[in-house]
Image (cartoon, rainbow, N blue to C red):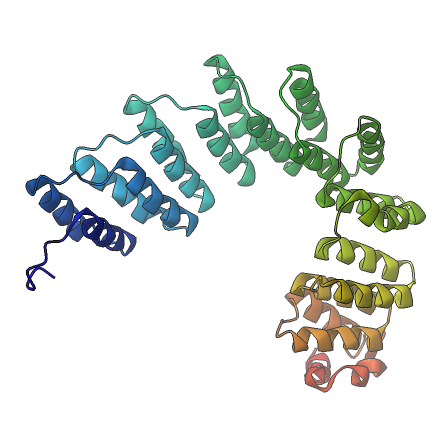
Length: 363
């Protein structure tokens, strides 16, 4: 371009700097920023680097994003709170919690005050990495500094407590949230209902859902899925089916998770034909069966000794170019081994899976 006598403008420089930053060549990026300054051109704004770092962190390339912070400091640009939030979140994403904590401390040393979002990101990282106590310590620190917890902050703590199996503490924190006047959103209810169900408090989850209904809380499909599973778990199967049937009337659309919950439970109760009919209905509605769903169905059928039916769904796995999960293959070998209860049914499987006969024999 230069050889042709064309002078690059700021847009060209920005495109080149973005390219070099994205591909890790920060030396070239620094040279171009310096060149822009020498030509009295305004260097890229902080939002420009924020955008690049956001993409890198989303891809798990947090070290490269950290290098861009060094580039910003090198050219005399002062990083702001959103920049540090990105890096803290990036380290949390790749489970490097010590580096995330160090970045938090570096932020403070630069004279920047962590905001609610900063605390929320780091607390979420601790909770996702099963370090709930560290998350709670940080939550208390936030309160000591006079920051009022947001819905996001509470949601993160609630999710972490339920994930750690600390149901009583989670219920206390939920009540604290409600009493403090913090807005409770649909995601909050989803976390609480799901957490109660996962921690063997299904009855409480159903009771809470009834209370929410009387408060005219409009459930989304995620909560409906939780409740359908809850009813099946406590053997209130008809209520689960009624709730599923009412989905369209409530302005919702069942998704793959909904159908997975319904089909696996129908198979469990012995209503295999009804499950097949539901699968056909799902396909006609335009909802596509994913790999996870098909593997769940196959395992449930195998556990009931429905080998031919399981084979049919294994064919669907092949047709969609999916793969059987390790748990599915392990169950197949276990049931069809020399000592397995369904050894004589191995030839009822699709031809592709006849190799299991050899694997079973070896076992």
